[in-house]
Length: 303
Image (spheres, one colour):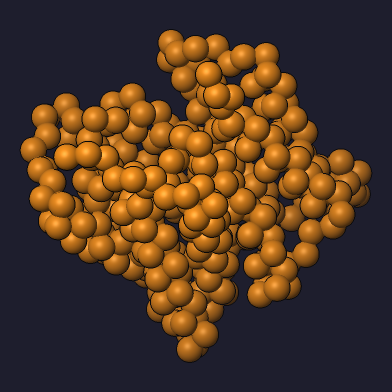
């Protein structure tokens, strides 16, 4: 069977940009849901459950095999647990700090992946990559408004610190998940790997909720707005995640993947329009530096 024909680049770029906006919208909806007392574990449970059903239907339609070796099952279970932790961390960050800021911090994952790969015996980052990493970290310092906060006499807001730490942890965990995907599970069909990952996230969320591990983690929204936001986050994430794996073979991801890095920019715009979350001029400049650095880091010159 021949490989599916690639979509024209302008269409592929438009689709990837739309998916990035959908992922950003999912986090904005999550913030609204959390502001109306929606439990974090409930959001994870609903999001992973609906996505799991969509991916299961795709796997069945494609007649993909679920036969895996014992070692592969072990790595798959670890991948699912890491994605569950990453989901918890990014939602915890979104609940505490502006959405755009949380997404920018989580976008440190490419730097952490490059360093992790090097530490585990992979290629050393090139001079160009190292310079871009430094540029990204400089931009992140501006986004976090570190100079101004250090100059303040008042104590730094504890929720701000927690949100940033959750974002950094989410980035580190996601980098580990990407390494496992690339080095241990790359031969698996993407739809099967993603379906099993969502199954582990769903099971972990349900188990944590049933045991009361996180007080209020399964709390229901206290208003109609919260229910609508919960439905929106499930719909936006489920559609974007499923569409990405349905169309992945036609989007020329190796060439067009940097487009997905517009998610923090979309988060900034949506956060401003919907949540009235404003960043100052220095933070916006820092955000542009971070996104530009990540795009350049992901870009590969043609051979």
